[in-house]
Length: 152
Image 1 (cartoon, rainbow, N blue to C red):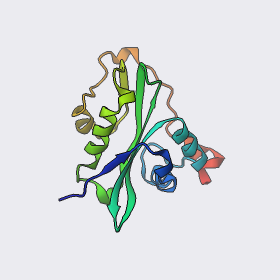
Image 2: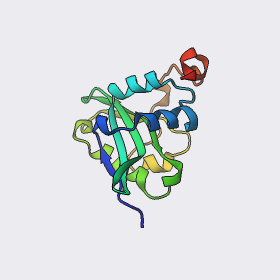
Image 3: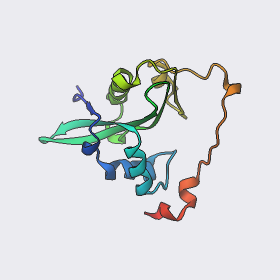
Image 4: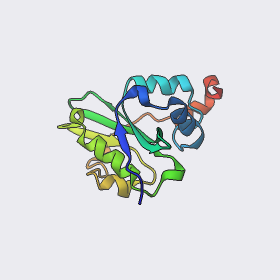
């Protein structure tokens, strides 16, 4: 039986080093991202840390952040569970907390991008865009690897 994941919005409890390390070294979407960029993104987002109590101390094992105006729109980004803790339902616990958060209720549009977790997000009401022809983006996938700050 897996331990219960505690999800918190306490920005001060976030393990910024762990978040930066995962994003810059292990993620497929933010490789090479500078720590300063991560810190700025955390300050301007609603962050969700997932914690386990191990040996009497809280250890962060999961993370997600939401960018929102808290009235009409939100975008879910940077969702991860550390590899050693996957397969235990922690991503679902994280998404349940996001889904229930009071500031994220009644939004007209809630978006995300995923390469391989469609089944997970579908359980929380996410679908392919109804009108993809109306959506546009400006996307620079290797931006963080091309900037001098990426070496930080």
